[in-house]
Length: 131
Image 1 (cartoon, helix red, strand yellow):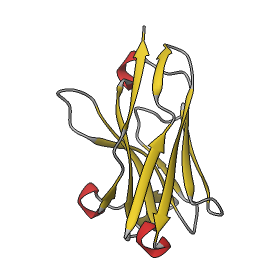
Image 2 (tube, one colour; image 1 turned 180 degrees about the vertical axis):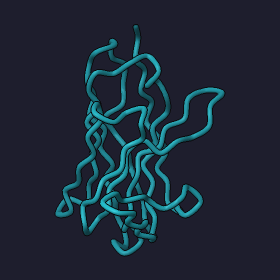
Image 3 (cartoon, one colour; image 1 turned 90 degrees about the vertical axis):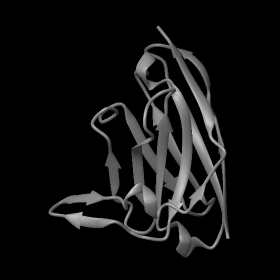
Image 4 (tube, helix red, strand yellow; image 1 turned 135 degrees about the vertical axis):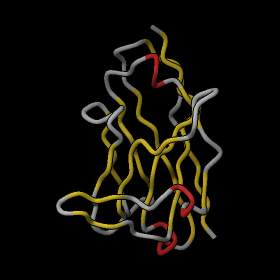
């Protein structure tokens, strides 16, 4: 069983930064891929930043590429996402999720598993960006 606990959300002005943390416990094999998803009111949930636990491959959605950086500390079983240059449209509930699947490599790019393969989710942490 895997448990995930997010922290670090809050309110910030546009252009500011926040760092979210996801502390994980349980079987590491069930956490081969870790992603940060977000969901804003009235919008579908989307994966914005993902990392492969062993290979440290990363993935970013186009909406956050160049502004968000995902990282991990495997000794602490913690995944982070540093969010810079925040925009009002980044306002959402952010969720940490884990998948047993490792995704796939397509050329030099790593693609995380689809959302349906993420079986473990945290409770979420709210990020609010004011313009």
